[in-house]
Image 1 (cartoon, rainbow, N blue to C red):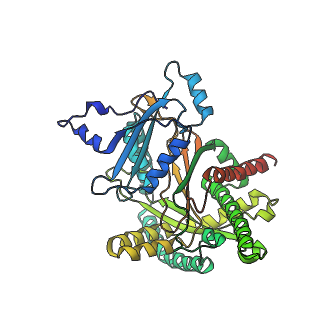
Image 2: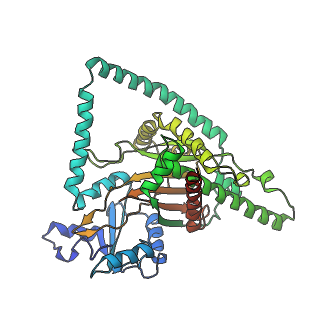
Length: 442
């Protein structure tokens, strides 16, 4: 929430370089209906393609009453109204770009150059790089050489294991679980179209980290929300199976057990994107697309066994993710994607990308934001939310993002897979609350 748009478009003239902003930035009417109007705008931006002959990015800016759009919750808006002496206005920025320009994490880093704290952020990155270089220099020549050899061996052996694991995932998951639960195929033309989106602030970052430490010393924030999202996916799949059984009974007159027709999965595949530059743009480097990914098979939340401790499943999820995380799978996927995009026909490249997902049910991206609130022209950036563009064959994507000590979630899904993203988001939070209760009861 801030007092006015961060750009003064009125000062742009044909003689001024800022005139180029008119091609990319649109000052528009502020959303009037709480969350509903904003949701429709986000869905449109996620589904309507950019005219690549005209531009690779665009921004929509609007201003209105604080909290009216639903970009931040009414509770947070009320707190801000109490804190603000005069201004009770918010500005909303909707930004989207084509993936050829840059990946989402790189764009977040690039947008850091727009904030008032840009120099402070750049200095922090340089200081961390300097610290790591100093640590590397302290090693002897022999240790550096042995380290390089071990990295080469890790990449060679790890690549073979990663390829074999990918084959195993494709063998054990021949169909996407959403399509299997609904009894539909990839080529089915009567699927509901469009996107289903939702967003919210989930929990304080310190609380999430405390839950992670309570479960295990190496459990991460991302492990927690992979566990929570996979639980929500399982509940959505169970709902689809029950609905499909009702439809089947109504059309055929035959009653069959749901588990006999489409048995519940004990595991599901998840895609986890990885920024190969550590989530930052290094000095002297362009933004580009620096995203790799890995696919991991994690235990599903079995509804029939809902009394089982959520913390036990979190430990299993952590173990599954750690095994793949330590492999060169993200680097390998990045190299294969670059080769396929540059040299293979579009149809073949899309088939490769679909198979690379190993019929995963969901992609879960972790975007680490700034540790404290930043400002644009003196105006506080209250909240940021990123929405995952769905890769081929993936019906659902979740972004876990931290900003100013708060973890936020956003859901982007095909409507045929997740008809109600608000409800799906509620299931994620239900599992998180269950984890909190179990950890606090220890």
